[in-house]
Image (tube, rainbow, N blue to C red; front, side, top):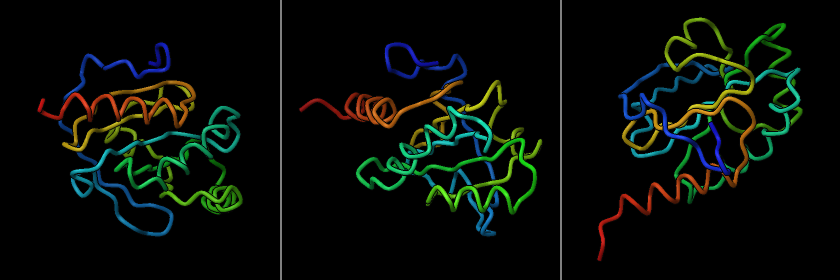
Length: 154
């Protein structure tokens, strides 16, 4: 959850995870394949206003290489594959989009509402979860604090 603009650590934070997902372009994505990078997995739907408000920030997060972050969108409650692809292309989404299924949800974590976002650290551990909208600033602030605290003192 967000408190004062920060992600609240989960009680289960630090749990090692992995997933294997195939995006709408047929490309495979695994958490272990992104070792060394932050991975943000965002459950969303085309009909969900807060989900749509997040998309520009998610595009910016994914495109900002200094964040060392990958965004993966998981479309939920969709009519069909073509609708999701056309919708994402219309919004200029450049991060991978996966069609959500029960199997995908079992690999990542439950959807308690839309949007729901999971954040995995560069070691592949789930460190935070947010039910509800996120912003670029919230994620960048969280990552910079965690990165700064992980650096040894000089």
